[in-house]
Image 1: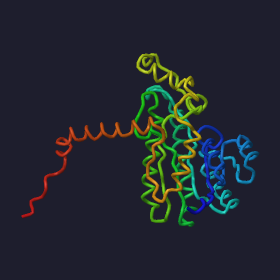
Image 2: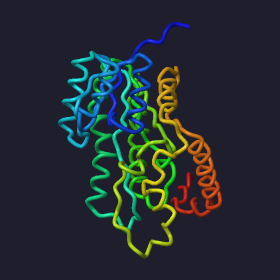
Image 3: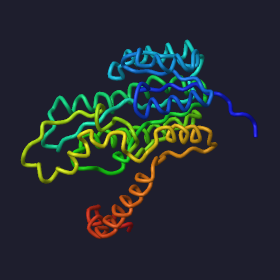
Image 4: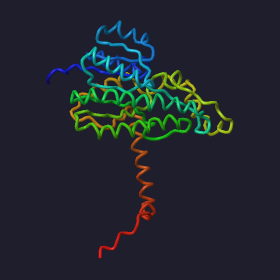
Length: 285
């Protein structure tokens, strides 16, 4: 087997959580990472450990002009981008009735528009190269929904739609796209990476369990190992035929097929009514 060829990664949200763990795994494997975060100083530890193979850059993904400028700087400093991990994002907990307009707009600014700006900025680079792999960090919440996380789920469903469409549009250019549908991983996502709506007492009983799970009490107790997620993504980008979708974690791998089976069963059960709405075929005579 020929030795693995080092790659250059562009990672958003590299300072903490899953993004940090993947970045560390990638660096340990010998790759170079353009690591971005809102505050570049949060990446100092990576530079101290891995030296010049880390290119730390400040980036707020909601600033489209800054995204394009940062991608251009990344290419100038490294010469190319082989893998893009579109990871920046956070959670919003609250019933659909509870969340404020600003909370929803902020959620979509980061999770959807931030992802979109990075995608638009890196695609010209990958197309010119004739190769590259775009990893869109989705979630099992992009496959199904959860009470108290409706708008977070909505942002991931939007990411899924964009990612699947991009995959069809850029395949001819040699660019691959994978939607990484992660389950629960041992990070601070439910604590420091979560914005919470003001609860309404009407939902106290209905959402009691879900609110507790999003309270931060579960942080760093989740079953998924972030380091192993990084190792899985390294194996993914080495594959000759990477998938459009990759589930990460036993919980996600168990739940997604159940969700789709229920959906198929419901479609079958209502198939007769579904087929009553087309115009009658024209008489060929």
